[in-house]
Length: 168
Image (cartoon, rainbow, N blue to C red; front, side, top):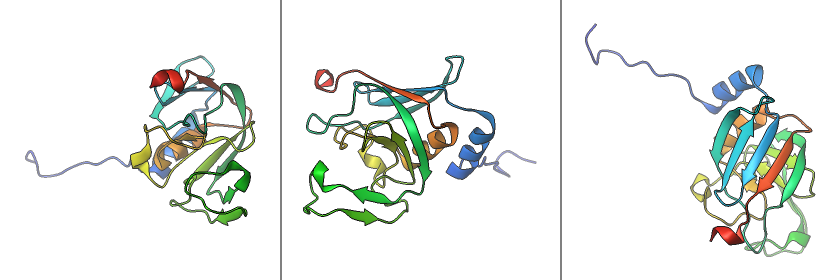
């Protein structure tokens, strides 16, 4: 063998990584830092298990404060639009649904929280991560959301820290 004759590539696909994490690690607590726009996941001993860049809400549609709980982890969710939220760019007063898939507004997984309409989810547009402007939810890339979803169970606490207005 000579240098450059072969290349070894590890499988870091979302499914491969999520599957391995699901078998070995569970998150005990999640912290969303609204100032830094990050999500941190900790195990039961308080050790950091994962760190993800995120998008949080805007002043118009802020991300919650305090502590919520995970109420559902839903892979391949159907997106349900509720007109009472009056999202920018949506010109209808009627509810509608968007089928599951990577281009769904909430991506490939929905981690629903105990405040109605709020969750941690993926996105069809990874270029929007770390840019303020979600509708209050916590947005991750699809691959990060899927990894986190594989480690999270119902009942996990999600603590929101920081202040979007102060982060300007």
